[in-house]
Amino acid sequence: MTSREAEPRIVIVGAGHSGGRAAEALRAAGFVGPILMLGAEPYPPYERPPLSKELLAGNIEIEKTYVRPIAWYGENGVTLRLGCTARELDLRARRVLIEGGGSEAFDRLLLATGARARRLRSPGAESRRIHYIRDIADCLALRERLRPETRVVIIGAGFIGLEVASVARQRGSAVAVIELAPQPLARVVAPEIGNWYARLHESHGVELRTGTSVEAIEDTGSALRLRLSDGETVEADVAVAGIGAIPNTELAAAAGLAVEDGIVVDAFGRTADLEVFAAGDVTRHFNPILKRHIRLEAWQNAQNQAIAVAKVMAGGNEPFAEVPWFWTDQYDVNLQVAGAPERWDRLVWRGDPNARAFTLFYLAEGRVVAANTVNNARDMRFARMLIQSGKTVDAAALADPALKLQDLAR
Amino acid sequence: MAADGNWVTVASRAGLREGDIAGVTVGEEHIALYNIGGEVYATSNVCTHAFALLSDGWLDGEIIECPLHAGRFEVKTGKGLGPPIPCDIKTYPVRIVGDDIQVELAG
Image (cartoon, rainbow over all chains, first blue to last red; front, side, top):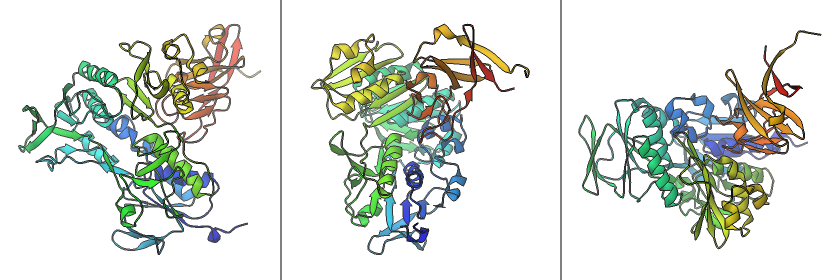
């Protein structure tokens, strides 16, 4: 039998969702060596989707977001160093240097440093009334401010912005949303779905301003005044910006690893250094189904890519190959999105687009390249199978609710 | 015989065809009923990961897949099958009385 001392020491930089799932998967795969996880936040690994949904609404406790209860780490030989930021990677000496002094040796390294919220750059953007949501502290700070008398302006009608709008309306705040594109969710779904979401939010009393952007922000001391590119002015007590995320690639880039809007890795999470891996939001990884590199800011990727890469680190040789998959919950509507198409030439509706539940398929040259389910999650499994198979489909059959999707996917 | 347990009629046997899932609510408890190969099974209907009703999910043989985040459980045992599932799901004893599906609730 091998002794623990003979086993390599794995250091995971980043104690987010990916880091936590990787540690768990390393143990599940039989890795018995020491594992050290470094996390800048004071919390153990947690899932981020509730930060703009249930946790922001105050419907769950913080602990419900944890990947594992904090005791799990000690019980499984995983050392958590929280409130601890990695400053530099010394790949030659095989050490991670720590902010404030000291360093940690590794034999094998996983970079799971995630992403951070993109900040507004308009004049006045330093106002403390402007919020972002990336971590638990951000969520709790904003939650304090979402009160019935509060006027909230949201900048960016993506998943995060619209989820915050939904929670804020349910807490009784007045909500305005500002979006540069002609309709919401322009980066992730077809305009038809974006327009469906525009109507959903307007029906809940959200004031939606599309085709415009923030030019300048003035904090009057008692409120915010936002000057928009269309000449209008919006007043609010609180602003929330959901304008994308930036991968935390600085450590990797400074260490000489390949970085192109994300740490570049293959389908196994490998960098050019044989003992250095990366997983989660921070990676630009090769997806064997899409046959291209992609960077994803998503729960599925944070979890499943981390598990796949951890298995490789423990000696496995299976690539991570899944159809990208995202979801958002707003009011009583669950939208799921599969696929990351660069283009499509046809939309096929399964169900009535004016109803509260339906599925939309995106086709390119007769193949399903993406799908959206609106309150229709049961179709999602088969939609993903159709995308993954890459086979040509009969559009009329897809649109026929009398035909079972599982038979078409087979 | 010990005193009869706390058996509650929750659905009609004829209404649950093979491969079907149904969600029922008894008091505060959400219960999912499954017909697998002609046998009826019952579990809690709420995923242990996030709030979702398993009866909206996909029954794949003896495995129920959550509609929200694709977490999976063995229906017969309630065993959670890996991430993101943090713990197993509660199962209920089931019996068929005439056309009634009955589940046994705790005390």
